[in-house]
Amino acid sequence: MTDLSDYAEKDSVTKDQYYPFAWDESSYNGKLYAIPISAGDRLLFYNKDEFKEAGLDLNKPPTTMDQLEEYPDKLTKKDGSRFKQLGFAPWLGQGWLYTWGWESSKWGKVFLKILAL
Image 1 (cartoon, rainbow, N blue to C red):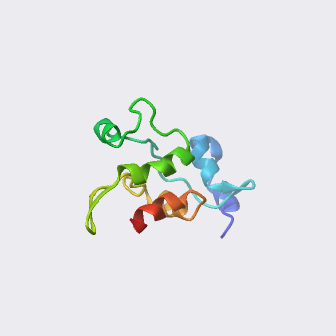
Image 2 (image 1 turned 120 degrees about the vertical axis):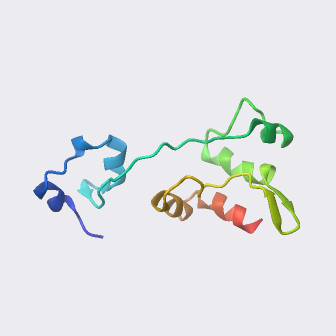
């Protein structure tokens, strides 16, 4: 990877022009390796009816990655080899950087678990 810090400095691209998280996601050890071009909200939407049907507590959605890892098995429904309902689809509404970078991280096994269903 190429350190872009000198290019950014030359063109007056500075940290104070960005949200702190966007700049931090583009930097490593104080060096800039990407230029933030967009930002998005990362939220978990869940269907209370599906939670109830799966026996999950409606008032306690997952708040940790460990909890999130348990939910796909409980929420996913298949009819033979066809999905009727996916319990968790991390790629929906996400960009390639976050989706596929996340897949290869420690918590990517959630994604891979879905593919194995």
